[in-house]
Image 1 (cartoon, rainbow, N blue to C red):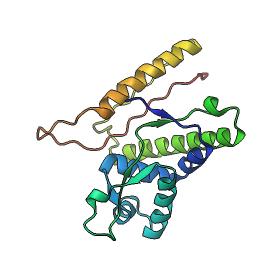
Image 2: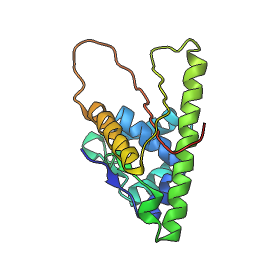
Image 3: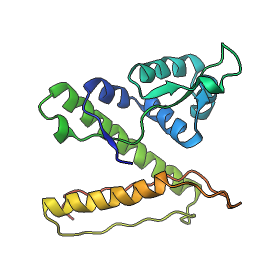
Image 4: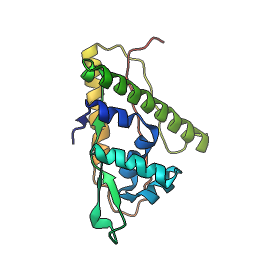
Length: 183
């Protein structure tokens, strides 16, 4: 499944909020949740989570899952969109969207670094994860091609049907970045 490009500044602005991003992560990893469950997963107050879920719902980023409710008062939510992607270059002609896209990218980087730090603190010997990096000499088109191939590989693993085979599986965060830099 291809990722959906985000160019609406309102959606980008919503994604630039750390709790909203975590709520979407929780829904993608754990599946549908009530606001109370989301609050438990994030360590946030129920009222605060409720507010942010309403914002996400107003933009179609989360949708109600009424079939899970046991009564009229109970409300379940699921992630409304599949994989999303954003790039400042896609919204360069819209200053508000470009600013929001930059904020989302900065927040994403901070979240990624935080998750790596948590992983290292939890398993100083490296645990079950992997780490790789490499210096390459690429043209802009080659870098784009490499990014497309890495994204396709991650997408295949993310969207595969998880086997029901008795093997214990746990949520895994995968990140890959490639960008021009100087050693």
